[in-house]
Each structure stands twice: as structure tokens, then as C-alpha cells.
Image 1 (cartoon, rainbow over the protein chains, first blue to last red):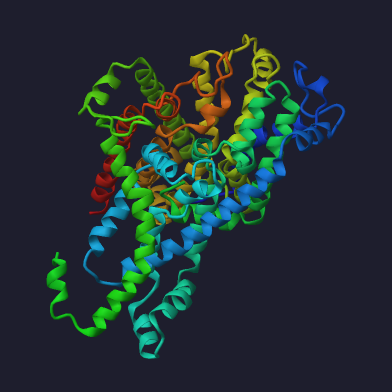
Image 2: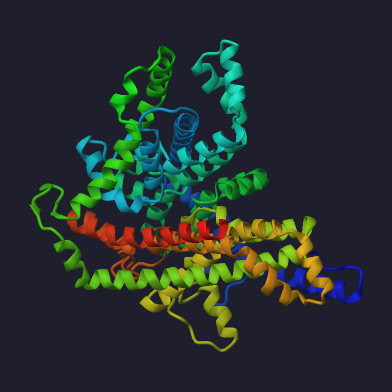
Length: 281
Length: 306
């Protein structure tokens, strides 16, 4: 499928295409670059027309202002805790339920699994109002538990792990382990996860990103800034200091940095994970 | 399916031990699943038939009144229009551009250069929505935004991107296409690379041009993947909220007002006016749209497999 680069015409085509794609690609990362560049500008340069690509004098005043006025470290920590708890729970519940649905016959198996698929296509926004009322009944509004609860399971995760169990966990291996005297729990927690490791890694990435980028649920359930995860905290900060673009940009760069670093380090894995889990991007 | 009673009679001991294991493992997960997914979804359907407020739950059964009243509600109609325009715009542009990118990458550019280019286009996908929306908010700024400066070079007058409702909708589409296109590109690339190369070689031998190969080979064979990308982009676009909420505030500084979308309207009816039955009915309309899109996808995918 690759066109020939040996002929002159082929080589020219190649470089034109690469040039166009690179130009477009630079345009794609421009907004990220622009945040970075703005965050180091002194106040006088923020309103300059037309703006220069890079600050004429670099300053870290915007960052100092962010750290002095907004609890961004706390926001970041809250996001780390939230995303980690959510990921661990989703991995464990999805693998357990997926394995059971894939490998055990019992009354109600089909019914429950159809229910799982049915809820997997229902977006969160559809049931957020009743969910909020449930949390209200349990007095969990404005608590971390209220924030975490809906993110402890993922219908799509159960479906995904069931499909992967069917394709990567052979019945013969399970039977051999049973004949060797392994108990069912030992098989489920010791043997099965080893075979499902790639699928679990993909699901972990999906779950982590989902919690890390969650916005509307934190906005609904939390009032107290000390519980805010990064996304919510950042949006509130940006609304409170609307005119100071420098500080907003600095806070945004701070919020984006962990994701960018994680992406650069785990690029292949993240891209593979996202293509593997496909359905929910 | 067997009834539970029939399953009980004459079941050997070994099977019982199995059932006990299944129960011990599945029960806790299913408790969470029912409490956090099944019950709220069911309740959303139920609530939509009631006058239902935070302090007065299930106040009065009103049948389909909420649904009927919504159809005459200007806010809902506006939100429905805006969301539909947004969804169509975002989907058409992000899929078309992604197709072009994937075709060029699959055909011309591989190896390290290709990987680097993929990285550039994919970067926006993984950066969270709030910080990038704030970046775009500065780019779109009326007074000193770099976009208006750049357009000024071509003699185009300053555009009120974030204060005019129509232009704000365009701005949200631009931002969302930018955020989505890399994801669509990656999925389409996987699909294109799965097309056996012999088809292209055979066509090239017969003298087919690159464009003809794309039209006659790539596009038809890629149809299921393209449909998948179209449907998931449309579904996620119908659920748009974060970027609209962060990007534009109205003159009073109320976020989300300027470009009213369905999720924002649900949010406002439910949590500002505490008209929760009404909000639930609105959510059901959103659900119907998403259900139809999902059914289209399953129909087509099944059709293309057989």
C-alpha cells in the first residue's frame, strides 16, 4: 500500500504529503503550546495585539499567583485518589463478574448479562438526576464517598472482561487447575488475571482516564473546594479570576502536565488500550 | 430458560458448590450494579411520568405531560437544535478530516515519521477537556485572541466568538473537532491497515489511481469501521457538556447559558429549578436519540458480518 519512494515523482509526493501532515500536526498542538506560552507572559503582554508567539520577557509570576490563591496541589491529589480508587474497583469488579459470566452456567446468567449490556449503552447523563437523589438519601452529597460511588463499576468493563475471558482463558486450563486441587478463588485471583493482563491494562487506562476527566458528576455532587478534583477545581478557578489570563493559563498547564507526561511515557500502551476498548472513548 | 425451581431439583452437590462460588463472587458486584446503574435508570423512566421535586418526590402522577410540555418549551427546543447542529457538525468534520489523515498516513507515511505525525494529532485526545477549553477560550478572545489577529491579517473583521450565540456554537464545534479527530484517525487507521495489501496491488496492476483505489477499495471495505466512528462520535456529541460549560459564559457570567445544550438544560431543570420529573423526561428524549443511534450501529454491523 505504500507508494514508491524510489522514483522522483514518488519522492516529491512523499515530501509534499509529509509537509502538509506536519503543518496540520503543528496546528493541532498549537493550543497546547499557546497555553504554555501564555502562562509565562507578564500581565502587560497578555493584552497585546497582535500577540507574539513567545513571551518577550519570561515570568513565573502567574504560577506563583496560582499556588498562592488556589489549592491546586489538593485538587491534583484528589484527582489521583479518585482515579486510582475508581480504577482498582472497576478492574476487580469487571474481572470478577466478567469471568463468572464467561465461564459459569447458572440460572439467571443470561438475564443478568443482558442487563449489563443494556446499561452499558445508557450514558451517565440519563440517570444522573435519580443517582443524585439516591446519594442525597444516603447523606453522601458533598462527600468523597458520594463522588466515588458511581465510578466503582463500569457496565462496559464487565462486558469487555467477559469477551476477553472467552477468548483468552481456555476451559482446559481451568479444568486442569481444578484437577490439580486449586480452589475456585485461587483460580480466579491467581490464575485468570495472568491470562487477562493485556485486557486488564487496557481497561485500567480507560477507567483511569474516565475518572480523571469526569466533570459533570463532581460538579453536581461537590460544593466544598477541598474535595474538588483537578478538572472541577480548575474550571471554578478560571471562572473566579476571569480577567487574569496568565494565572488561568498557568493553572491549566499545571493541570495538563501529569497527563502529558503520562502520555509521553506510556504512549504505545495508551493508544493500544484505547483502540482495544474502542467503544467507550 | 429453565426456571430456578427446575434447576434446584436433582442438582448434584458439585454444582451446588459451583453455585455458591458464583453467588459469593457475583452478589457484591451485582449489588453495586443494581444500586448504581439499574435502579437509577429505571427510576429516571419512572420519574419522567411524575411531578417530582427534591423535597416532594413522586408528588403527582402526570403521565406523559412532562414529555408534551417539553415539546412546547423554548429552552428545550433551543437545546435540541443546538445539540443537533453541534453533533452533526462535529461528526461530519471530525470523521471527514480523520478519514483524510488516516488515508494519507496509511498510504504514504510509515515508520518514525508516521509515528511522530500520529502523535501530534493524537495529543489533544488525551489532554483533559477543561485545560484545553481554557486554552481555546484565550485563542477565541474577542479583543486580544490570536485567532482574531490571524483573521485580521486576511482582512477579516473581528469575530465575537464567545459572545454571539451562533459564533459560540461554531467555536464549540471547532474545539470539539480538534479534540476528537485524533481518536477517529487512530480507529480508522487500524481499520485501513487491516485491509489486505493485495487488493491495492491488484488494482495498481490494473492501472487504478490512488484516488480510485481509495474510492473503490478503501472506502467500501472500511464502511463498518467508519460507521462505528460516526456513531460513537455522534453519541458522545449529543452528551456534550464540559466544553460548553467552560468555554462561554453569558453577560451575567453564568456558564453554559450562551450555547444551551441538552445536558445543560437537564442540569438546569433538575438542579436549579429542582423540577426533577421534567428533567428526567428530558433525559429520556436524549436517551431515545442515543438508543436509535445504537440500534443503527448494531443493525449495520450485523448486516456487514453476514
